[in-house]
Length: 115
Length: 111
Image (cartoon, rainbow over all chains, first blue to last red; front, side, top):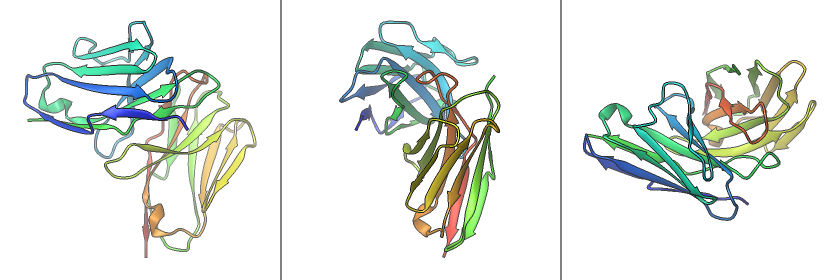
């Protein structure tokens, strides 16, 4: 079945630094990738949608200059949290699809802790 | 704007009992997804319901979809402790576009 690999699984960083999270589709070409954020005991909130070779579309309230998304190839999307602050600490999950006929495959998630 | 609502949000049940989780959505869609999430983990796909009247079963879980009522149910039969997790339903208006999630139902099955 379709597999999406997400790295790292967890990361601790100091306030003010940047962190990059990778999301790779291992056995299919992901035309669209999604980035979600999940706070404890809450649902998943969509942050942005990215299509290969295009600029990401951010949801209302998500700072595009803070959460940089790159989808340079059909198998790789990255989320960079710039100048991270403690309030950015969260569980980040990517998802990928190869088109309308296919479902969504989720990565294993990244636990970000900013200290 | 598509809204997806689940109830109950919290469910504590005894092993061996049956219960149903409900998922209502506000806009026409014929694709509904159910996921399971264990603490600290990502989502595990349970069911994809693609048409009105669709019913799928896997073990002690059975999901159904009524697109006219904009309602899906996840029925748990003879619950066991291993089913303890958070269950999410999600809907996309256009397949492959974006998913909108319900709030999640935190299920605890007690011995």
